Length: 465
RNA sequence: GCCCGGGUGGCGGAGUGGCUCACGCGGUCGCCUGCAGAGCGACUUCAUGUGGGUUCGAAUCCCACCCCGGGCUCCA
Image 1: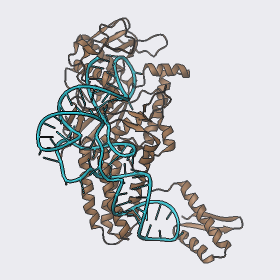
Image 2 (image 1 turned 180 degrees about the vertical axis):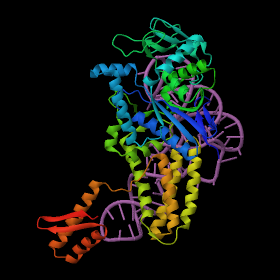
Image 3 (image 1 turned 90 degrees about the horizontal axis):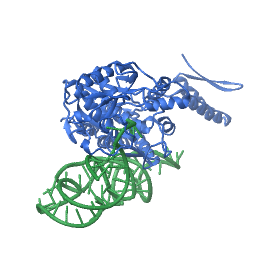
Image 4 (image 1 turned 90 degrees about the vertical axis):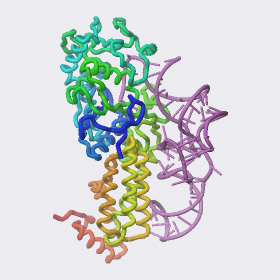
């Protein structure tokens, strides 16, 4: 059974065959760090986190790089608002980004690469493009002449000649309206780097190709990003890199994630429905978020609503209940029927994930397994230890690909609350002079290493050892 | 205007020619149960935007149309 991946370039699912045998080079467009990350970022980065985890599970050695755009008009604007330096603002929100990713369990990235740390490589590329005649210098900067690159428009399936509608004011010094900036001359007070074409800063698209060329070379396996980046961003990357290196294609598999809506509308600040990851995390935990995201194909649009999040939580709870039901059965005999269900689930799960990372379908096979577990647990009181071990570890394995996990550890606050409760119940029993039951609680806790001491000011507890 | 997606039951959401169309959520009933919860079983189920066409057979292929969304040099 082969892994198949949907490639935006061809518009169909293709068998996944990495360029370098077992090694997979994967690059995903990271955030521009000028504000707190929102749920759209969460959706995209969770999707690629799952993809990277699954590829690793399948035995591939994945080198996963994400860029950090720490230099850009939006950052400069934000810095002015905050009265800080642009790079300070970028560092600050970069740290917040990592914090948000950690809260979502996004941890598959091997290298976060900052744009500002690859300026030399960008300048080198721009020089190369000038030499080869793909770029030209004007008084406002350096531009890429898209008419020089015949494949321009292939990824987005557009004819460049028909791209005549422009939302943004076109720089008058450009040869063609569709030409994009490789280097921008800095205005007064803007961050600036020296270059052979004058002081300035790089255009947006060049950072990604500078980074991938540095770490991957002229060709790599997977380039991911959200769907709205196909044009012009990814188109520009192809034009730059392939013109510069002469190697085509730049990327073997172009992968794009679908848009996240909030209550049916695309998130935007003007609509007031811009939800940050940290705000959403206050209401729903990591597992709920992950379950929400993997309940839809990564390529499909999805809608963030309270209803959908409640449903995601219910799904997580269902699996968790089943997991702990099996876990808490007595060790003994029985459970062979679980192995058959386990094999079916494994096969179905892997087959679904192999089919362009079809997480909703893969989930359906996990639910099939949990139903069998529940059926077993409702009829039996014990299970063979080895069988339990196999079922639970496989379940954990699959859930961890999706980024869902059930913690075992009881945190401090829960432990304290629990003991407070037991002490209170015991106090009630003592008041009713039901000392045998009260002593039973004290004895059982002692067995667990918790000592209760009744003092004149009430009962205190301590952990032995 | 051009390019690209999407429209499936009460809801979410799989499924690219054919075994009663998954799976989940919600709801109803029953079982279990001191109560609650969880679970089990049954039902909710004869859903594929509209109109044509191809076919023995279409959610799936073709044509036309309607609606929603994304992109068109800001964007995850």
